[in-house]
Image (cartoon, rainbow, N blue to C red):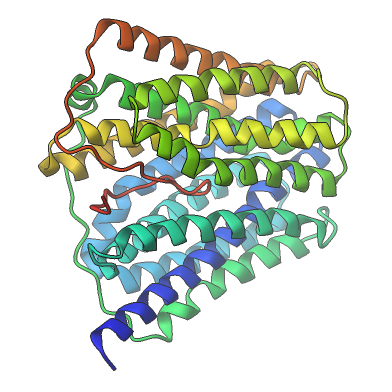
Amino acid sequence: MTSRSTTSIAIVAILGCAALLFAGNGLFQTLLPIRATQEGYSSALIGWLGTAYFGGFTIGCFLGPKIIMSVGHARTFAGITALLTATFLAFPLFVDLFFWGVLRVLSGACLAVLYIVVESWLNDSASNTNRGRTLSIYIIVSNIVTMAGQLLVNSFDTLEATLFILVAILICLSIVPISLTPTPAPSPVPSARLDLKALYRLSPVGVVGCLLAGVVEGAFWSLGPVFAQGHGMETPDVALLMAAFVLGGTLSQWPLGWASDRIDRRVVISVAAFGTVITGLIIGFDIVPDGLATFVVAGCHGALMIPIYALCISHANDVVPNERMVETSGGLLLAFSIGATAGPITASMFMRNDQSGGLFIFIGAILCLLGLFVIYRLLTEKRKRPFEKAHYAQTSVASPAIFPTDAG
């Protein structure tokens, strides 16, 4: 078997692992808020579950590289997948908020480690000549299967344990493609000191943008289904609404990235931020009638909100030297994770007294602050000359980009 064939098989195997992993998590991210609402938990308590998840994700970002360097990618993936499978199976055992909160921390940490394994393994398997195409395929696959996973919530009664078991099956199966193919072991994950203050001095918009993108995405993924149920949607419509957001975010990645490669990225970031404010207010104040129009506006909202994180990453990578790329990516992910941890519980305060539309008013307010900050930076700071302007780096709606690439 040629080296090229081995590489192709490795990439396909890793993409297969990622597809099953994202499908399972996509289903769970929609299932848990629906089930929690059916169990009578308030939006504030469901927000705490979202905060627990992203808090665990932040922990996993620190632990992941250490675990991988200790036992390698393959053992890490196998062990953490087994732990995550058991975690998902444990959810229906006890309907208890504290118990679920502990499981959310654990599942967040596990998923962060698995994303690090998958994305670093994919980066290592790809070459400089095909890395850009490989990562684009990865983004497309992850977004499509995330949507498919969300729609699986319609398969069984959400009050039964069946859907939790289905999540666990998908996660467990994700280990099969990589285990049964001759995939070379990747290089160790590089570690870097994370200094947000130093990174802020280099790219204020990059750091603040990733932080606030984390706030709104953490709030949305944790409480979006709660909003839909608060508007009287049944489970099938909740799944379709969440899929519409993801579809919009998937379709807009390329055009917004194309625009940001040709003009100051900060201009594109501000346009996306203020555009999201408008769509958020339309949804939050029920300006459009229920039905198809709601799903169309939801798609537009996702199209503008989801790419903001990737735009901020690309802007930051434009102005940092190549030797600081790993440190930069780690710092931006940390900023995103901090924001995502704070987002759900903060947004839930805007949803009290059955005001579920407050979620989108909150998102609009946060992104209005981002847009104003970007305009301030545009007016007070000249555009920095890039070391070598990086192409726009797409990110998955399910997993923030963790490692830099030289896809150029």
